[in-house]
Amino acid sequence: GESVGLHLPTLSVQEGDNSIINCAYSNSASDYFIWYKQESGKGPQFIIDIRSNMDKRQGQRVTVLLNKTVKHLSLQIAATQPGDSAVYFCAETPLTSPTDKLIFGTGTRLQVFP
Amino acid sequence: AAGVIQSPRHLIKEKRETATLKCYPIPRHDTVYWYQQGPGQDPQFLISFYEKMQSDKGSIPDRFSAQQFSDYHSELNMSSLELGDSALYFCATKERTRYEQYFGPGTRLTVT
Image (tube, each protein chain N blue to C red):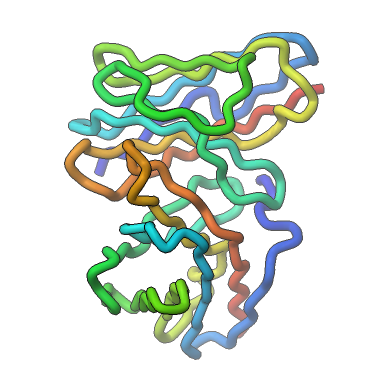
């Protein structure tokens, strides 16, 4: 399949450890943020989202933190598993967008080793 | 659960040829977005449709056009293909009243 993210930042973690993937966004007017997981040759898969009126949101094994002051978003994955290996993208929707189009940030490749 | 369907999954074309990519939304999804992802790049928004009308436009070349049909499926038409058009093309769909977009598996276009 396609090698997505040939030159992306890489985070290597040991199986069972927690992972933290960071993302800086540029548009202070953005209202909605999403994390996607993309495996090689596949489409981005929705993981978790958060609105700008929240600081934290939790899902199953994942937590998203939003710091609007420094325009920073992070994704925490608890007890990382080999199946979590993928490229992770954050995306934002600017308030000025009439249609909720997504603006993607630079992806991060997560590698999980035994 | 039903997912977004894209066809074809792979497409090889020569320069100056045309290509048509198709996207079939998840049931009840009425909004379609097209994104282009080059090697090692993040997805870039091309164009979107709601209720068969173009609703937003991004960095889409004039050589490309798209439309949405009455059954909400969408087609991306690409003409005078260039080598630089080689990429993964994703469509994403959602319900108009919701934020989350769901992506299809993509079409890998290779222009030789």
